[in-house]
Every structure is written in C-alpha cells, then in structure tokens.
Length: 280
Image (spheres, rainbow, N blue to C red):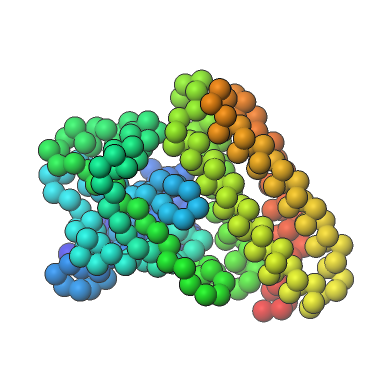
C-alpha cells in the first residue's frame, strides 16, 4: 500500500544523497529494501540505524511502539538478504535478529543514547526486535551513489562530515560521562575513515598519479595528511576506550580531528575533483 509520508522521505534521501532536512535533519537514516514475505516484491522503508563497528549496523523494529512488528521486519525474517542505501553507498546485506543478552545490551545502548526507544517499548507488549545488518562482501570498488568520480569524492566526504557533525552534537549534550553508544559511534567513525584513506592510498591516488603526473605534490601532501589524521583518530580511539575518560576529554579529541579532517577534505576536493572530472 502506498505511503505518501515514507515516499517523500525516500525521495528527499535519494536526491540529497542521505542529507535530510526538517525533523530528520542530522538523523542517522538508511533506506532498507526488503522482499515481501507473502508477495515476493521489493519494499523500501526509511529506517533509523545505530553504528555498531566496522562490519554491521543495527536497526530497531519499533514501529513507534505499535502492537505489531513493522512489515520490513517480517519481510527480512522470511528473506534475510536486503538492500541498504546509506546515502553515499548502496550495498547488499544479510539481516540477523539479535537474541537474548546480545539483543538486550544493544537495546540498552540505544536507550542510553535516545530515551525515545524506551518510550516505544513501554507502549507495547511485544519485545521490540533489534536487527544486525551485515554487509555482504563483493568484489571491486564500493557502489557509490554518484554519477562521476568527482561527485563520488564529494558524496563520500559529505557523509563523513554529517556523521562527525552528529558525533560533535552528541558530545555536547548529556552527562559528563561517555555513553556506550557514543563510544561505539566514535570508534565506528574512526574505522570508516581508516578504510576510506587506505582505499585512496592504495587505489585512487596511484591511478591519479599515473594519469596526472603534475598532481604528485598534491598527492604527497594528501598522504602526509592521512598520516596526521590517522594519529588523531588513534588519539580519539584511546580517549573513548579509556575507562576513566570524561566527555570533555573526548570532545577535545573530536574537535582536533574535526579541524584537521575538514581542512584535508576541502583541499582534496579542490585538487582532485577537477582531475577526476577531466578523466571521466
């Protein structure tokens, strides 16, 4: 059955590569496409998610505290292979409903970060499911939602900017201690940044160097910046994993990383996007 509200969110999400406005500004959203349990047809729904390390994300089948599970949850129980659109990337994933203590710990983390999840649970007699979505590995480069190599850089960079903005917002609110989910958010961000820069160092930069020899000084600077950013990310990792770290200490590390990373992303876009667009 058509859902005009969801359809509007889906359209805005796709047009803006995951950047949302209005009530969803800054929210961590994905588009989740499942296969209908009875019909076998694809169904796409906007769903909030939680970072959960490098190999999976978590989604919560709250349905706003409704008495029945959402359709997408029933679909993925019948057909666990799903499609995830993150804004920057589209990939296939394997869905697995968490059970027992693992489910309870994940839900507790979610509630600590956003008490609204607890309000949904209080409204219903069902135990609200938590589902892990594991990306299915595939050969070749990632499927970036962009029409050119140059646009791909901007799309991926903007996704990092949005997530870092959200982490900075989370660091500026709440108690003086760091919540478990906020720690996970920071660690997941650092791992994603490491993966991105490794891919550039091993893949994109050598390709550009081969086709555009005059870009050598810019590429050398970018590689040096990768090393500095990696050191700052490691400082943040140590800060959020230390048992006695307070929020102010972690926030200071986030701000240091933000300043260095934003300068790096801006310089890279200025130097490489024109070259990649010319190559395309």
